Length: 302
Ligand code: KIV
Image 1 (cartoon, protein in one colour):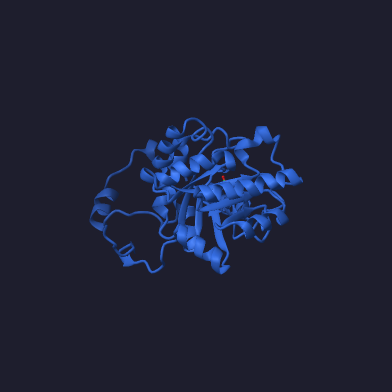
Image 2: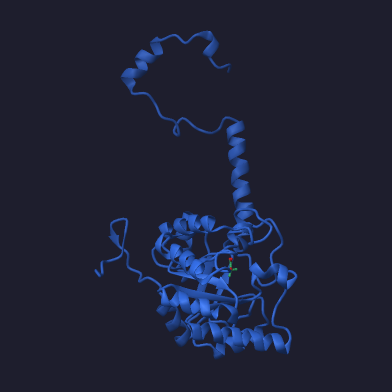
């Protein structure tokens, strides 16, 4: 192994990379972990430059970028394609790729093969799988295969049909016990972090306090070790109402739309491009060009 300096554009990149151990140290020292989704190079660059710790190529991609009704149709090839793009834009963040529905629900051999593709072909640092105790054996096998695994319990969007919709989970004593056992099972199996989605704040706080690995919440209250949101929710880019737990930090839709309307008006009003935005012939060629008379058919009407 050679330990080379991390370089970006020829210069030494000063910030150390985030690893699974960084996340664990943050939990232990009480420093919150920031996480967000990204699906392409520009968003990966922005997220990285903002100093966000964990970048998830979520299968929410299917809904916010690809326009599916839910996350179920997302394929391995789509996830690999976008994970590769994010990996190319990232210098510092811990890159987690969501394993899509169906890619880890068959044989363990197939699941391990698919997970390894994310690491080997797409540059992911970890994969995320949905489910609790029922995934513990798979988490063990993936960990044995040197794949870091992030668990995901509570409101698991790939179970939308079984759950009967996107509903807050863990609201009964039995469901609470089950989720606590799920978190414990994932930790014991080797998960490096656990996403807690759509569960009561009190339950998330208990799981977080009991857990030896970081919890990252979405709709799970402020006591989790970290928080994650979907990029497009932050910027009003989903074209649908946002969930109660989400917070809009800027109106990206209004920002882009206003610029697009100005662009359209400049094009239709012949204000774009200007002469400064145009290329010109060299002076000597221009003289020869001016001497050539254009046929009247080709002269544009003023
Ligand atoms: O797919 C996704 O974006 C996710 C996060 C919401 C945790 O799983």
